[in-house]
Length: 387
Image 1: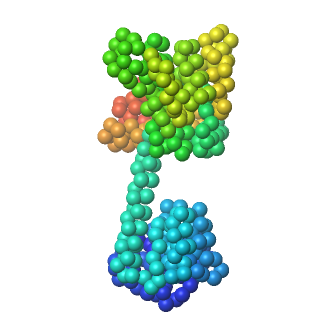
Image 2: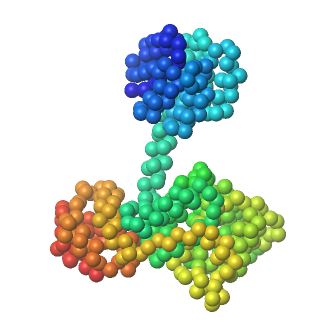
Image 3: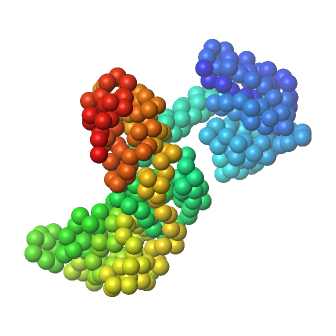
């Protein structure tokens, strides 16, 4: 059922609009507000799928209602109702985020078409939000420890900016999850996030991988090829294990940061790029700098914001939540019935030394889901998860 609010100070027009809309579709639930102040109060306390709002009203005019409503519930389409003298104002409200406007007295077909189109838009907005949340579940940061909540707070403050972020922490702690959260909560979310594992690419190929190459620039370069920086243009590039990057590639990354441009291997042509860089490493980069394996100037360019992801042994209070999350996710992936872990089993797992961090915990939970009993017990852990 679609819930519609009409904000209009003239009772006769409210009644006519409500009658026309209600008779069009019995699933439309229409509510009324006699002025802007009441309308805002109703918007704050209810979930509407569409708002029709008059422009000229006492107490609070329609333009102010529109601006306030867009701050409270930005996803609700708002159709402005305008008198003949309000057309210029009505057009201006479109710039402020109104879905459309209709003139008084309303044309029946125009009114109903506008209502249907606006409700269709709301459905699309809700579906897009659902799909985005579904994607985001792949990168959830599970935990309520002080350390994890501190990271979440930093992400909330930093994500909307273009500040460069350096994420540190041991292997398997979820540094890539932090990078994905930064991207998904940023204004760049509609553009790609390109991941590069610097440790997995041979040093002689890392520059080509990052910046691309032109045909004939080296043996095997049979055609021009764009690099990861170009692919990430407008979005985010995640340089994982940047501590393993060669010094020559570091110099080019530094130039990309300083000048927002790159050049392909074998070419002297500059290519402008608009990319946010997020980097991660399990190494102590200050130690790498001291022995000449990492550029100090690049470090200071990357480490505008530092986020340190703790080892699992330092956030044991999060283990029960992680076990529950992994158990449900793995059961769904494997097409198996959900299993619960006994309290004693969870306590035992909290006492383990998790040298492989979250990655190791997930593997152990998967083994127990597959091999353990319906309720995973201490005995199951001793049989299938002993360290």
